[in-house]
Image (cartoon, one colour):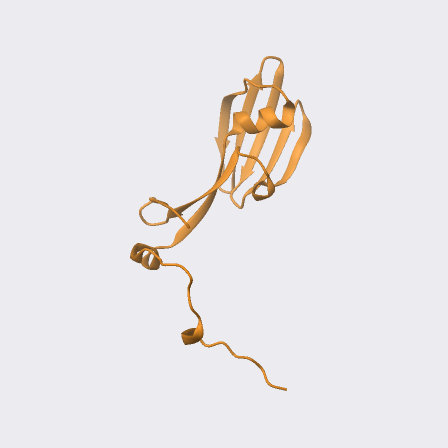
Length: 118
C-alpha cells in the first residue's frame, strides 16, 4: 500500500500575505455589541452598561434596562454566559452566534493594528 506524502515545497497558497503578517503573531478577538445582543436575547431595547469587572480570564458586564438587569460574562476563549433577571438565557460559544452583534476581528499582537483577512 502506498502513502501520499505532502512536502512543504508541494503546498501552494491560494492567497498572498502581507509581509508584516509573516513576522507578527496574529490574534483573533470576538467583539460584541452588548446592548444589541441583549436586545436580541430579551426582546427589550435600551440596555445600558452599568458597570464591569475585569479579571485575568474573563470580563463581566452588568447592564440595566428600566426594571430589568443583566449580567454578561465574556471569557477570553470566545465563550459567554448571559443572565437576564437572574435566569441564564445564553451559555455557549460566541462564534456560533448567527447575529450581527458579534463579529470576529484579527489584530497584530506586537502593534495592535487591525489586520484584514481576505
